[in-house]
Length: 200
Image 1: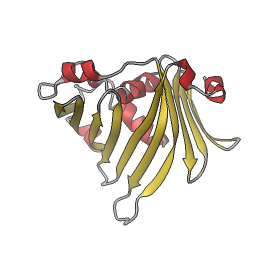
Image 2 (image 1 turned 45 degrees about the horizontal axis):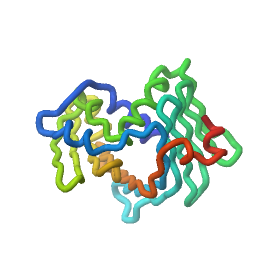
Image 3 (image 1 turned 90 degrees about the vertical axis):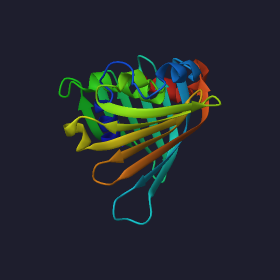
Image 4 (image 1 turned 180 degrees about the vertical axis):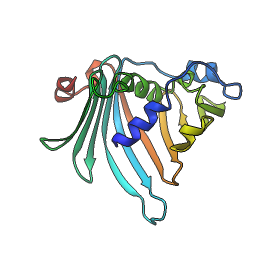
């Protein structure tokens, strides 16, 4: 999961607008909550394997605070991204901790991931070229890495949604594919359970 978020954060350091993507129309459809939580279902298809790796859980994104990604199945784990660190825990055990002092990109990951989940396409232009469409308040965008260095890691990203991003698919250059579907979206401070609010 950490690799996915780091790859996505690298993909989200940019400016504004795609010629072939109706950015303004999509932005007008999107809700822009300060806090949103929901369910995620993730399928990772590894190149050369028949069956995908499946996981599911709950996520919360709080603007200016961070991202909480709680995998509940098949094995419980928590990934928390804040302004100062990336922390991954298995139960009560810290599995990974990356401090912003050691890795400066940690400070931008939370804002970049929020932009992705919010469908903020304006962040993607410098590193991707894209095509998109809007139909009946639903939209879809397909992005292809234009930077050779990034293309060696991420071949492309697709996003689909309406008022919220409903699905993100990450195509890795090695042939792996990760699809994440979001559902049961809730917004506002009341969307956070007390234990989730305490994480921020």
